[in-house]
Length: 124
Length: 124
DNA sequence: CTGACATTTCGACATTCGTCGAAATATGGA
DNA sequence: TCCATATTTCGACGAATGTCGAAATGTCAG
Image (tube, rainbow over all chains, first blue to last red):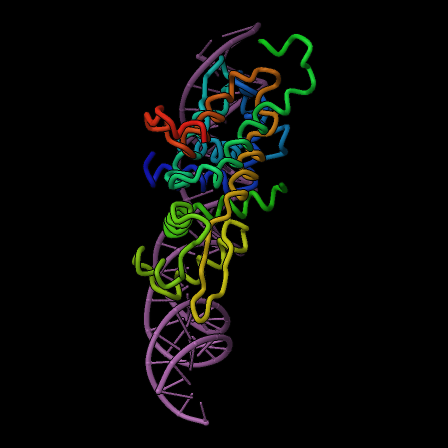
């Protein structure tokens, strides 16, 4: 990942409205949410949201899909992967224990402690 | 982590100079680097760098330690962990495969593919 | 084709942000 | 105490950014 792209992604996320949008869409999963619904959920003016969505898409954080007269936006998880890799590049010169916590944070955030479901569903 | 803190960290990183500083310090490890040396390495004016360092410290991304007349700055890895957790919160509603790539990216960035050292050091 | 709805584009505004020169502070050594 | 060095603070300037109203675009239904 290039420095410019990283800056674009970071500054795209560094704004309350856009951060909310991104996190909402992360929670929404691959199906995403139509622009109008995002605006309603977060209480943003449609035109303001439109600018923000443009910025997020242009930064590679979101994808957009037209469905009739609705446009559906979804988070792009790889955007985060790439950003993390860029930020942590060469973080531990042979001393993995230094950045191990970051690695574990990613796992914890993704799939909370497996929630004691140790009986059977774990294998899935 | 709170929304405000996340915004502070993201916008602190969303600027070429500060992003360079942070990545340099991530690579430098726990010992960090004196302000003057950072300025020299990245070609930044001392006063400009000082503002940037203040912002990074205030955002919780860096720590500073006085050593005589030198002030040593170091990256704070947990700042990244917390940020990642905040961004990915509830990312996969029961579908771990969605954000697994992010998790693996963190591992890959931290400790590159173990570099074929499969002979012995691997167990460490 | 016309009307209704979802979304975007345009233009203007105030605010925020990064940078720089100059001056101030803090620390160590003579 | 006085000087040199490392770093920070102050003040001002131009550039970039977020928000909003109004108008335009695109899409579906009749």
